[in-house]
Image 1 (cartoon, rainbow, N blue to C red):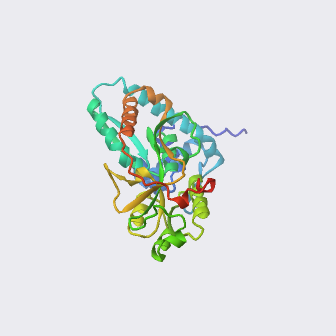
Image 2: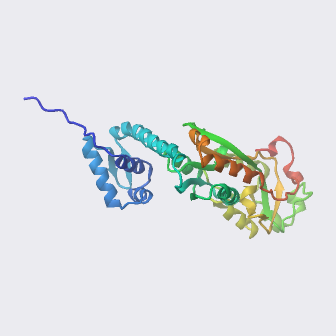
Length: 334
């Protein structure tokens, strides 16, 4: 007697593939259910049904983690390809539909969302009043994941904060965001050539307390090396994951911080209570990442144009010259 081979059913739905992809990318089932807007029991039920349909497990269930099996690893790129195709189909048909309200889904880093997005949204609504927005404040790596999953259409971030994205994304350069040294207002570094001798003990102590960022990127390591070269007595007063929190700590006198200028702009004003000094640093370049085919269709084409216009309208803060002790040759650069 010959045993029949297992048959894979042909009624796998796009909804089940979306659930599969969400579980694969999310840290927990709860987070995946939240992203999809369904309950966790419903998500687990749909995932089990999908595994029944394909005839094998797609995940190894472990405490606090869901790991793809070999079958799951095989399915993952193919499911993502199908989901991308469906999303591109929906977005491509959008321009032929009249009278329909359109949502642009955007994710970006805080400083860019706060400074560029208000002006861009105002400009776009004047020409496309039917547009609304779904906006997420995310870390750079999360933004790239959302783009790959087609859960957002536009990502706003620093060019050097993620590896080369590839994957069919266009990269539109918006503006250069200069790094500056933010120090408390009472700490005057103008004309200082030897801080240990020329500053008071109190001010020298502040100068040697730094507020750092724990983003885990190559830029973070470069900044750390910069501090070590130019501030040999420096120690870390605090580690942050937000430029805005760091500058508030500086303003309170907790230490100094190397920050990009966009994080210092509050509306049309610069953060008060700090001195901002130029340094010999490479600017971070702010870019918009968008699937290549979206550049040619509305409303994305007009949205990118609005972002570019808003970027040109940004007024950088007033900066003081590089302090002499930070302008001492190649070792002062990072």
